[in-house]
Structures are given as structure tokens and as C-alpha cells.
Length: 399
Image 1 (cartoon, rainbow, N blue to C red):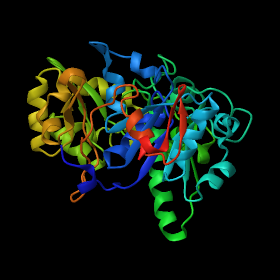
Image 2: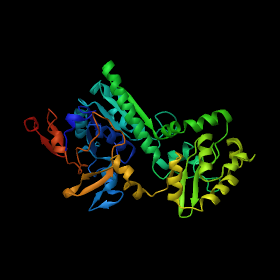
Image 3: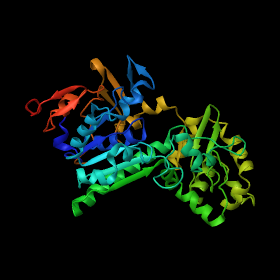
Image 4: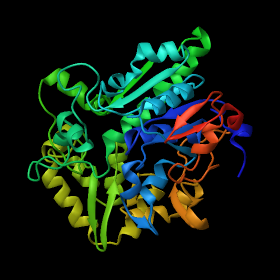
């Protein structure tokens, strides 16, 4: 593998990663993929995710996906001498990231003032559930709860189905992404000021931000958006339509595309009908419009319609399963499936790098670590005697 020091956009940036499960590890994975030296601090039993998800010969593919390119060090942060080790690691670090409940890291003796006294240039980043202010700040957070409290869940599904969660843990991923963005911004600010700062991202705030265009409507109307299911909230026809052998997604996102779509399926006469002559009327009569479109499209196969619509430059695609997508030419062409070495050289597949940098691309340069795999290596970088799990390593052994 190519050395990260040669190419990574964040090479030379040292990150102390105290996160676990998903939101925080996703954040630090993004930094590690860009070349940061990420040292994952784990309790003696390890990150809980090491024992979750599909296990292959005792190895978690879930853990592997979000902890590639990292080093693992075991520290028991309930032991004062091992807190001292953490303080030593923080003294020359660029970033520390944690996703404890708000206030927990402070109670451990690592409030922001203490962190500044250890290292004034340190950027302290936190991913939490509900922010650090208000009565909910100290509550444990889970994606399911964040989707419910943010209003996100209320937007999914239909009036008949009721609220529905997104299949993926979207609030964890969005918060991790925003935190990584905040860290990079703080690093750039430090280049100007020489000072570190606090960075915070929360699950609920992240989801609120992602719903900006729907929120803009609610600000004006004071009403909750209607549940539209697979239909578009403000455009028709737009959605999933039946064919003779399945269903396809069609996205006529303007009057122009609507005309192209209806021409392709031989229904341009609908535009002469008062019920469907403009988008406002089509929205009011969407159910009957969809019924007409489905009756027409069910006469031919999915491939027939996709070929015809794409030739006319009307956005349309077959609805595929995740395995079908992962094995598709589109995903292969964009290198969005990669493999890493697991235990005993076993290959573990994982998703690739969605952000493509021409000169400093993301890369896979380190396999997901075994628990504590790099503890001895990292302890040797500490230039003083340390007490670790009842073993004192003299300075001479650490140089």
C-alpha cells in the first residue's frame, strides 16, 4: 500500500479518536481516509461494534467498514494513570474526537479549559445526540430517537402507513459528516490564528439542516408537509411506476421533462386535459394521473421503458437491490467497492471513497485494527515513564 505520508490531504494531522459505534467512527474514518493519523482509543473490551453485525470468523464487517485506516490502543479511562497516557497523547495531537453524552468527557477531567491547558492548539470535536444546551443535552441518543424528535420520521411513508424511519441510520452519518467538515474548517482557522477551538455536531441538528427545503415551506405555511411516500412533494407525475415485469423510478423534474415523459409513453393528450394541463392541477389530481400512467406503462417491460426514456433524456432507472447496485458497472467504474485485508489475510469488502481528489486522493493504507494492535507502538512514542495495566515502561524503553 502507498504510504499515507506521501499522498494524503490530511497527512501529518494527528487525531485521537475516543468514539465508538457509528457517528464518531464515521467522522474519524473520513479523516483517516484523507490521510490523518487516527489513533482509536478503546476500552479493554473494545468498541461494542467489534461484536455486532455480520461476523466472519469472529471479525465484524460493521467494525471493519468504519474503522479502516486507524490504529487501536487500549486505555482504561477509569484508571488515573491511563488518563495520564491520554493527556500525553493529547499534548501533541491536532484533534480529539468524542461521542460521549454531553458532559461526560468533562466529568472525566477533560473539559475544554483543561484540554486548552494541555494543548492550546488542540481542536476538540464532539458528536452528540441533542447538542450541549437544553434539558435534553445529557440524554443518550440513538438514530431512531433522533429521526423521531427532529420531525424527519414524520415525513417518510404515506398517510396510510404513518411515520417511517429511514432504513439507514441517517442521523449518525449526517452528524459524523458535519463533524468532519467542522474539524477541517477548524484546522484551516488554526492555520490563521494558531489556536484550537471546539467543534460540535449533533444528530438532531444535522437532520434539521438536511430538511432545509421542506422547513422553508413550513416556515411560510406553518403546516407540516404532506406525506408523499415515493411521490414528489411538489411535482407530478414523478415517482415509481409499474411495468410488465416490475417497477421503475421516473423523475420528470420540470414541465419540460414532464412533456418528454408523457410523449415517450404516448400520453401527451393529458396535457390538453384541464385536470392535468399544469403542475398545480396535476398535483391536485395526482392519484388519477398515476393510475393512467401505470395502466400505460404496465404494457411494456422495465428495460423497454428505461431505454426509451433515457434516449429521450428523461431521468429514469430500474429499482435494484443493494447487492445488484454494489455489483453494477456504475459502482465499479467509480471504485465504490474496495477490499481490505482482515485477520489471516482474509479479504473484507467495504464501500469506497465518495470524494475524489485529483492530487491527494483518499486511499486504503491500513487494515482495520485488531483490538489494541498498536498499543505498544504508541506507548513508545510517549517521552516519559508511564504506568499501563500494572506495567511501568521506563523512558529508555520508549525511545
